[in-house]
Figure 1 (cartoon, one colour):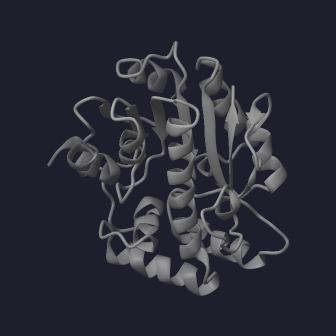
Figure 2: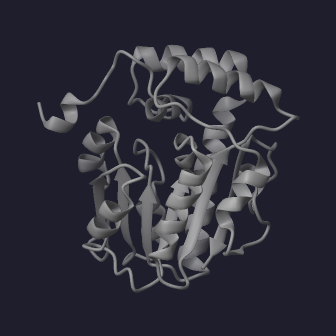
Amino acid sequence: MTDIESRIDTSRPHTARIWNYWTGGKDNYPVDREAGDRIRELHPGIGDYAKADRLFLGRAVRHLAGQEGVRQFLDIGTGLPSADNTHEVAQRVAPDARVVYVDNDPLVLTHARALLVGTPEGATDYLDADLRDVDTILAAAAKTLDLSRPVALMLLGVVIFVEDDEESYGVVRRLMDALAPGSHLVLSHTVTHPDMPDVDAAVAFWNEHGTPKLTQRTPAAVARYFDGLELLEPGVVSCSAWRPERSAPDVAMYGGIGRK
């Protein structure tokens, strides 16, 4: 057993594995499925949130690689590999795209070794690091990415795990400050919203039983992550409403893209 594999805890539900379960993946355990079903009882639409976030990722990466000409992606909080991972979407548009994945979940890293393999023309790498380890991430990512050229920083459903607001905003600012002009921030975040009270109940259940614990923020607080950046239309909205290919109900997962 490797050091990474020895860190896998199957006794408690874990967010990456529950997310995988909700999106139809197989990389989860009974404890994750049980928690996922309980959360879905509290909030029946939660599986749609996971799918909406994944579809947002695809649309965002296709836009950045196709319309903005971005060829480098730094995806932090990768989650378990599934269909249409960042490198797959980007390299279908631009085979020479370079992608670095970052996660600190041992199950994610174990699967990343086998599944996150890119095109011969491009490059795909992964790092074992926490979002807060900004200097470590940047130094390691620079071995694959040219940080003097634009990079798309992907932070989908990950800053929710940094409870302190100022620390959370500060981490995102430090990462963006280190990237070249023309870089983009792609971020999504679970929100608390008066029109969606069952979301709060689902989050409370998760924080009591699961790991790691997550923090909800208001849509306005999510928009603050993009301070100082040029927001692409339609701004910070429900992920299902960001340039959708077909209309879908709003979800309590908000996201946007900002250009440096």
